[in-house]
Length: 295
Image 1 (cartoon, one colour):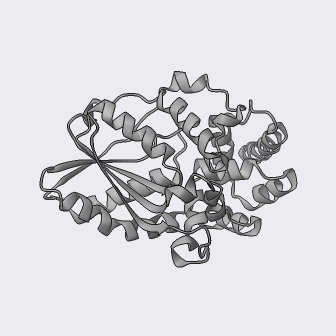
Image 2 (image 1 turned 180 degrees about the vertical axis):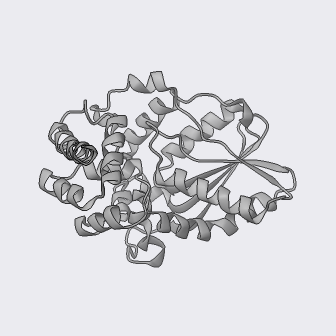
Image 3 (image 1 turned 90 degrees about the horizontal axis):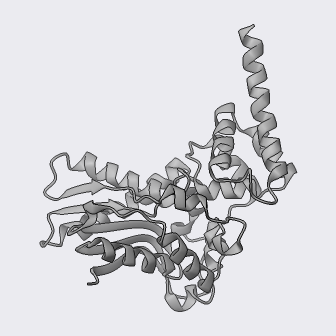
């Protein structure tokens, strides 16, 4: 039996020609990279919608808030947004009328380890896929999701940043139906009208994009929690650009980038050997400095 479902968003794109410079999009590239202030910006905007969605439904006294599954222990911007919304709710409602619980949906690690990330259909940069590829990708990933008994009979609020083609929502709806969720409410920053998103899915990359100089500033100066999108973007740079980034990063951020690059499998992916070699060289410099200071 399909659970009750409803979609809400801060902004709806209904025309292909839209104002990419509008306020709602201004923080979006930084948000996708994991810049903390931008995550908080959207969380504050979305918080009234969250309270309205769970508060108006008298049928359910407790809710579960969740977001897309995390791949390789690397959160997406949507996960950061979900956690921030949960924190806002907890702070405002120490003894809430309606209980809100946080669940992080998990993949089966062993099954995920067998995925061929060199296959374009499994691209980690989901924004580059067309509609058919997105459907195939979500079907494959959906089969790797671990069940969660806590979802059965409960109301679910699923937080995400953007709905372009609906492929991910369809896949997660099937997951929640199989888990026996009583209802699902979908909360997005941006929803693209289906007739646009399915024919022009590249619109997502247009909204996501930050020029190199902006990328350099954001990852080196702002408070940031590197997302999967951020790691993808950095690893996709030219060697000269990546070296500029590494020179600008402090040692903690360099170490974090190397850690996440390993976790996300770039060491074994075709076309990234030089990038990994460069990042490792900076990490070795860090260790050499530490050894010298200990002498």
